[in-house]
Image 1 (spheres, rainbow, N blue to C red):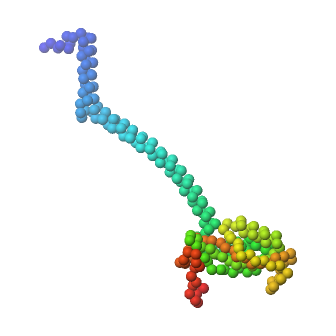
Image 2 (tube, rainbow, N blue to C red):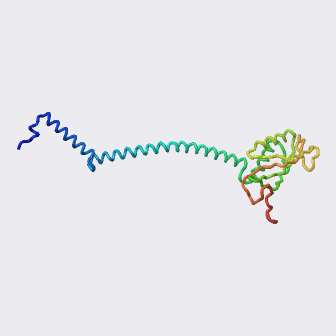
Image 3 (spheres, rainbow, N blue to C red):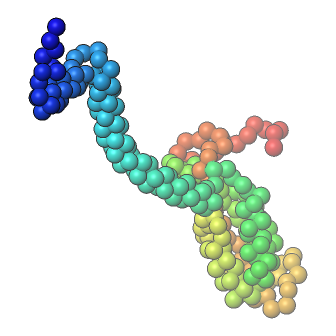
Amino acid sequence: MANPFRDMSVFMQALVAVAIAVVIVLLGLYVPFSPVYTAREDLDRAVAERTTLTTEVSQLQVYRQRYSELKQQMDALAKQLETLRTIVPEDKEADEFIRLLQGAAAAATVQVRRITSLPVVARQIHYEMPFEIQVDGSYFNVLDFFTRLSRLSRIINVGDLSFTDAEKKGKYTFRPGTTVQGTMTVTTFFAKPTEAAPAGGTLPKPPAGKP
């Protein structure tokens, strides 16, 4: 039986071979469930997923940058809060405050004769903790004492000043160079309520017999 393919010229055989190859390739590319078609679908799916992920990553980059900014803001606010807690602590910390007063007086060479705790006063958003103190020293040392009070970490108000001449010694023996003596009310503040109290009033006194 004659073979038509062998009867063709070499050029025609090459054309037929190329045509058959093209048909096979096209069948592999477009016929469903063929290995090439399946691989092509997988490639297209992977490219589409990659494009989607790239878009999502680009969008998340904005949130990442925003997160860094928010973290910096939170750190700054935390530092401010820590500073505010030092200036106006949550608790009374009365002992620490008295140590601050005595340290400022000692540095200014001022003698503190008496520290009397006064009733705590409740305000709308804070509490006032006043002390009446009696001091004596030279005029400039007392001024230095006031200056040092203004530099302490806690907020301090000084009022109700009452000074007399040191010549009226009273019951104390003054240091050499003492020229003035007097009393004043030194008030500091704290934020955390220790007991229930109406705004603008004093805290309730404890029952009799209890400290």
